[in-house]
Amino acid sequence: MSSTRPFAHPDAQSPLACDGVSLDTLAKKYGTPLYVYSAEQILERLRLFTAAFESIPHLVCYSVKANSALAILKLLDRNGSGFDIVSGGELERILRVNKAAAQRVVFSGVGKTAAEIDLALRSGILIFNVESAGELDLLAERASRLRKRARIALRVNPDVFAETHPYISTGLREHKFGIDIRQARSVYKAAAKQKFLEPCGVSVHIGSQIRSADPFGAAAERIAQLVGDLRADGLPINSVDVGGGLGIEYHADHSFRPEEKIRQYASALLKALRPLGNLQLLLEPGRFIVAQAGALVTRVLYVKKNGEKTFVVTDAAMNDLIRPALYQAHHDIVPVVRRKGARKKTVDVVGPVCESGDFFARDRELPELKPGDLAAILDAGAYGLSLSSNYNSRPRPAEVLVEGKRARLIRRRETMDDLLAMEQM
Ligand SMILES: *Cc1c(COP(=O)(O)O)cnc(C)c1O
Figure: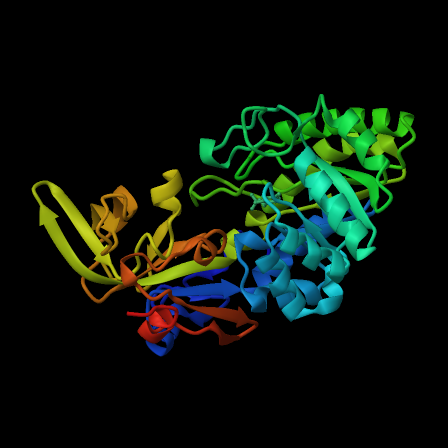
């Protein structure tokens, strides 16, 4: 139950399973490529957060962009989670799941449009994380036009360095995100003069896939300092949003204890923030909640040799899961059926898309895979389908959610008619 991944071989003969449900059976029923998620694992991770922050008023606002499947949002909503959104589209998803969940929504993002702001104001979201002085002006104008008060936090850029891939690091001054923490006090002063704005929070998000607790602690210390200054300026700051970004371990051979990770993370944050007293803490985990709950199941089409290299060509491609191509990310790959005495081979696992970047593994030692075999690309629950595309006119995979011993389709496979529906000749 509290194991890192829900994907395991029940015994030596059985195919790889998700919470006991055979991936071979699911692949036969729903086809491949296929995303499979464990509901149990998602809730387990949500519970770990709630437990680690039990000692302080807090709300977990799951970051919708990590995996925005309605069924997963509904599962989280039913279990008390809030949501961090970065677009009007993500808000529409939440409203479809449960209109009342808007009260648990925080709205982040550097480029909110007037239409998105209006939708959020009308829906009565919890708080806006404002990322620039320009956005503050627009929000003030829209709020006064609609005569709706907006609770706001400024997303400040704390200028801390976090060890992660450069594309998913966001907490340095050179990044486009947030407001320079040195300018924040004067922007808050301007906000406080606006009749329909209620500056009551501070927010920060320093990046993604950050595995050490230290940068989170460093950012929290700077935030605590700012909260103190703002309170001294007379602003009733009672909310601190520490963003998301807590990383997971994508290599099974590294020991990874999620409970331990969250405990270290919580202790780094609370050490800095607890002295502030009266405070609601907002947390925006995405990857940590869903990444390890999901796998992308794919079938081997061909095995080909070019010179010294062996390529395993799968029916999944970079359009289905772009993390390896985009971030040089590692995903463990496991054959679904273990063949007795299968030899290990060093191979590249690649998709059919016409890009050299279309790979899932390079020079990876794997048990021999043959055409027709199934393989599971693990830890694909976050930034998998949500970052997918139709590149090469490839319909997107179906998605299945395993709940207890039952599996159900939560998104059907796209058809060519779906892909062409928007076009005219
Ligand atoms: C993407 C994002 C998150 C979630 O990041 P994870 O690394 O998936 O935890 C949280 N907050 C904001 C503002 C984001 O942009």
